[in-house]
Image 1 (cartoon, rainbow, N blue to C red):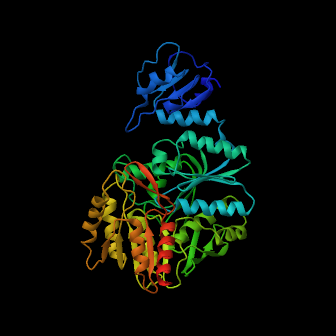
Image 2: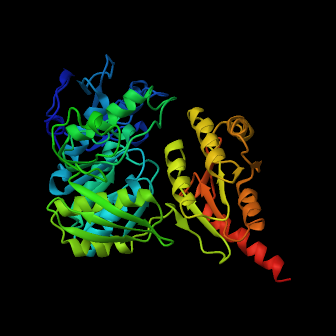
Image 3: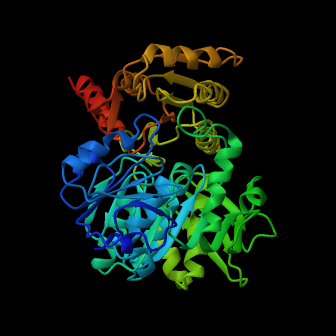
Length: 490
């Protein structure tokens, strides 16, 4: 492919060389450079790829894309652009032949609900014979292939590569989580989504290398509605109007508010999940049943119903698709005992923990027990707020370790304890080892207890000082239960 083809939708300056240069590969990792590569220099928070220009030139790179003055030596084409990540996104789209334009693309943004909603939409579409790919926090699904994820929204090159594979495999639709970081870092740059969805918004991912403040977080979320054709948003959320303020798309809403285009009424929480009356924008009333507990399930399923209605999916097919959907690590019940209930959930911030604990409290358990920790190298505010929420809503909090990363687990735990101690009458115990914390809850469970193991959900690892060790909360629960039963059967 000629370099000019990769640059055709970008504004750029030719510093030296020619855009007629033949390109063998597009890379942004200097280690992958080869003869004929074009190397896009990404200025990261830790490393600046401009420093690796001599390395890629030595490997035979034919061109480099830069945002500042750089010496690539003779014989190498140098292209200067305004935004490195935007350049990578547009060039990746061109490299793979603009695959997003061959698919019906559905992007979901918001603080929580993205993962569950994406699986609900995909489940409905697959049930009616629509081949639907998925890109999200847990995995990427391309037909029968399941690829574990490291980010909710992958780098732009990877997004375009996945889209290309989907199109090649006869997939016609894709639903993907579009994170605030994904929008901020232009990972979905150059994509005009057919549908953009807004679930809800609360402070999260603020501090460190993420968002400097809530305003930036909100702004980045809102960008999705400047690059989609049709928007669908939660009108009940207090930030709905701010998110949609500068939209360029047509807009539909969902919620319990009477002004919503799609509404949920007569909501009933059942032991198995939820039931409600769904009212479509044309006035059609549907009886909705979903076997996932929680009031948030109403919003997630209503979003899926609304989106599928906009796609023209028959209502009965949507209801069947929602009736049997399951999502790993999202209020996932682990069957271990008839005396008590234990669940795993990804709740890892104040909003999601408050939401799931409030919901579980509505089921009137004997005791509501919450096991959680907080990730290291993230905003400390999350520790204080989660400690406070668990202290207020749970009958017993078991504070343990999550992903300490490069922090000491005991320091993170001390921060959590400092906040939960301020909650009047809050009961808690500290058990740093996550397996021992779970084992403690199972060994000491009382009839009708409802135990929530929060924070990691679908994750099957624990990250300590840059290394990911295998750890799966469901496996830990089953192991602890097996040990308890073995003792009882002696």
